Length: 359
Image (tube, rainbow, N blue to C red; front, side):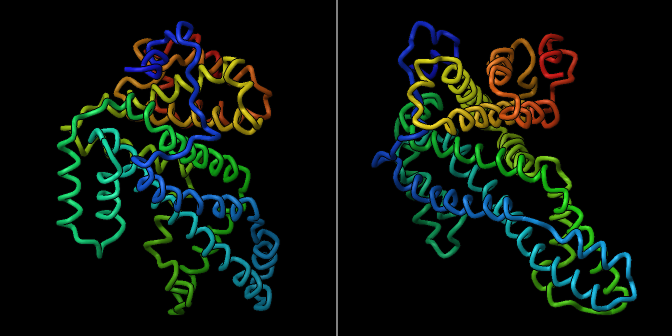
């Protein structure tokens, strides 16, 4: 099964030369079609993070408007400040939907159908994202590829490191987005003001142009999204859980083994100086930690027994220790994610020492 399986079975000390190159992995010819499609979305993720980092909110304008309800100039100023922000929030939300779909079709299905070459995922991408594509041709390509001899999920992760790197980049973006969002309370304040104003104007039979962009149904969905402490992670967790639930004929182990393998690889890389010394940037260390935490959370949501019990294929004690060995400022958000966004931490089956480590 290769080095990754040896990591998974915790025999890494006997195989010290495995390294998943998060910095330099390049797509092979077999990976390139899928890699190109995913890369287009990942490039957009940079602008999403930049937009979120630059989010300042309209707090002062909203306060002025609330304190002076009869001053129409202040009402107009607040509204004109909030509307562009709501459009930006819609862009973030729409990207989360795209990311969730991408995650399912470019990775979860990739795991389950034992992809051998690029044509399977290209066909899936075309079915899902390009409605004008000839579906019969896509299905034919898919079926032809499905006749190829299978690889295990572990072998895919080891053989196709460029796609493994993109998988990691999706998780890294997800946790980074959520860390930023938690530091910006203005998001929910701005959106609440927007919804109150829309409702008030609707009662007065006033139709505002922005409702063509963000109607009531869209506003309701966005409200649920931003009410989550970690909305992007929730999106991926829900997408993963739904995928497993709705595809009962596909082995659950294919998904959970891939997630636990990635967590184990990240942990070993983080705790092994021989590997960390090969990172060209300190940012890669944080990247690796975010990826480890992301796959743990997904595993905990998908696996019936979660990630924390003794039968888990993830060494939770080791993963938490790796995080706690880092500067507190770098890992506070990650430890909080394990505490507050996992599903099984407080189960009776969770060892007491694990719960204590996260207190």
